[in-house]
Image (cartoon, rainbow over all chains, first blue to last red; front, side, top):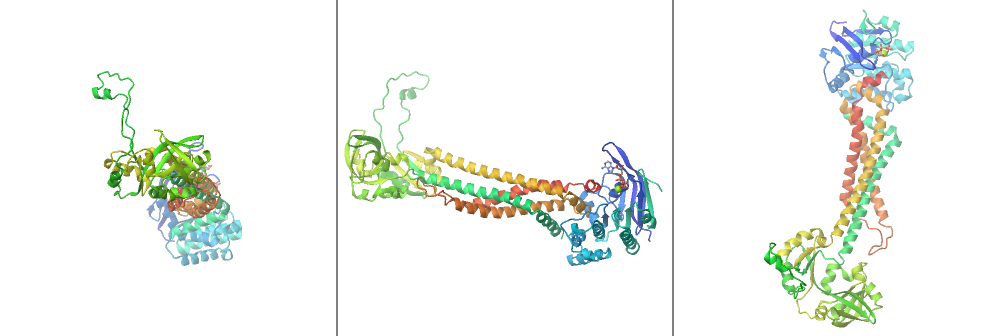
Length: 226
Length: 414
Ligand SMILES: Nc1ncnc2c1ncn2[C@@H]1O[C@H](COP(=O)(O)OP(=O)(O)OP(=O)(O)O)[C@@H](O)[C@H]1O
Ligand SMILES: [Mg+2]
């Protein structure tokens, strides 16, 4: 693990105004190193998902500053952020969201096709090897809404990895998986971090999963606890 | 590459809900085919109407206008500050008709727009057969030119138009007039002028134009016979009728001719405002009805695209999370409605043409018609397609814009 900073959050605060104004995140600052595998834990309602949406640049309504790969993302336009997400951030959601009309393989290919850096053939090969890594090579050509919940979740993970993003974020990425598949996903994350230097930030309720990761960040009532 | 990807997503959306897509396409098809049919039909009706009207009406008409208001000539002379009292005013003499028609015709016939000129001597007369006496118009005409301008010859139902040339005592009578006078071919009819001159003519033809003014009140004779009847010499005419290449330019040509002629030069639309008004109104109705239908089709597409956006809102959120920007999302949804518009447009053009052809075979035996009139103007087809595309574009843009503004966090948070 080298000492480069992959992501840094400075004095992040966020308020919700509906139904009444309350501060959901309170002055949060932390750094994540390149290649670090970070788990974020905390009680339900402590603000983990909210923080992750901010870090992923999808939510821009906050105060403070977020820097990823040395680029300060605070204050950029929606379209700039979309392009940045496409190239540098992979996101796995609590619920798998796939395009139901597309095959598993097509779903995985989408972000790379959008990025447009490689030929369609190369992208297809990358997508296929990602699916294989997650034990889904037999499902590659199946339409995604014909897959089981756990399979869909793994397709979503394969999709998040396709552009080899600098940072991979997951909101309970193993929430729908059994312990065997949770182990597979954990192992993949660990490898990506260790071997390719990709940074992982995973929100989880799975203590065992968190304990095995490089570092744990605990949120409580909108503050960092450790 | 990203454009290809967007297209692929558009196509997936369209094909995943075939029924809705078909409904949207059909509504555009319907709107466009109605536009084509309505406009083709209305133009057909207008053309028929105009053609019928021009079977007696020339594009430009030269005649001796009655003198203007002559009730108090002295007032004009002395001005408004003097009171003039004139009782029982009468016009004692004014020149009727046109004296030297040949000179006038020579002066104007060089005009490039003119396709035909014919002189007429029209006389108000009584037609009498035995005890039956009807008033009408005896039209002294140039047998050849009259038919060139008005196609009179083709309305002849009995006898022959050409024999007017050979027989100075021959008359061609309107069918209704002949029937009322109980006259058939080769019978004699007496014509009496306002001055009391009477003369016998032989019925050598019956004409039926469906225009009341002709069929029920008109008789045609050689122009020289008409002059004789009212004791006028060679060169006298009451009207000069002129046809031009494009009847829509009648007013323009009339104003060009006016300075060369000492008499009133009047275009058909000046004397028959109701014809033009009827044409304009029918065109407005056709456009209004078909645009309304297109508008309804537009609402249909708007509705369907809105439903699609709502249905796919999670996918939109995920696409945005993966880095598809607002422009991509607009493209994805706009392409869908444009595809609907193009397919609906092409099918609509074909369908509109078929409906028009079908309707043009419906029997409709009125006037000179056998079937309903129909015109196939390529411009209608092009305009229909363009209007269809504009409608679907606007109807699709609003939902697409809405889709592009979806906040992914709000959707993903659940
Ligand atoms: N759109 C919103 N408007 C108002 N309050 C919100 C909104 N979204 C979340 N909250 C509130 O913010 C707080 C943090 O929510 P968040 O989803 O970040 O919790 P979490 O730590 O992810 O919980 P969990 O582990 O259950 O997923 C909660 O109290 C929640 O009720
Ligand atoms: Mg959460």
